[in-house]
Length: 298
Image (cartoon, rainbow, N blue to C red; front, top):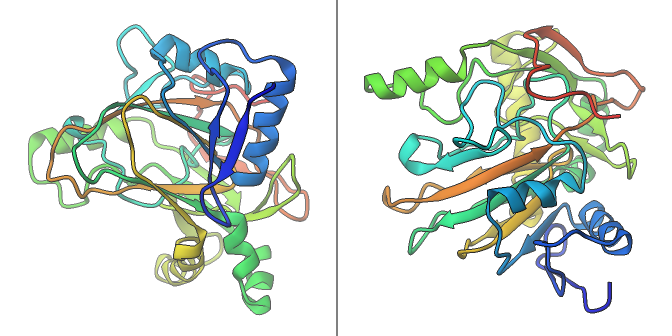
């Protein structure tokens, strides 16, 4: 592990990692160091990675079993675990979200690798939801501790509600071709660190027991703590970079500020466990079987 260097990017989230070649299998000491760094910093940035799709999958697999690319969206041809995040395919996720929380066991970790980067803009914002929980005033924290939220894909973060053409409508139909609804605790306990984080984001559409309008007010109030500037990493992409982030305790947002120029990333995700709230109760599925997407991690 000699030579590995981990440098903080901000006080609350993010670190640059250097001195390790992630295109090669990691020895156990290095793998442990990266897992520990991910627990602390929530998001790790690797530059000059020299990876192809196969290499990205091999790196991600060192953190656990992979999911398929997505429950409803097609993978890269010949790479069933790789999701193209392509501005030209309408997949600019300019909405705060945690990946695939509408299924019972969302990914534990996500990797994004840059392929085509616009000359300006196109940053990815990543938020520390544990810091957000710690920021809550005590009355709000007590409220959040007892709440559950229904997450669904029948709300497409990648396509605006006001679909304006057949192509967008077709993408939305594909995204919702299997409808999923899952109830998760609003405050999730991280299975490794024991930290509590706000587990909400764009797919969280309703608080269990509240009306849609009441739910929106509560979710917006809590979400405002997640997206405070102090809790954010604003990553400006360069070519040949990979970002690894802990999907259990972060949210992210792709900034649509590059005038429609080409922007293409590839995403590979690591299967996760079923979220658990502060009382030890697990999430439960309401609608939709995602077993074709991800086995429940042990």
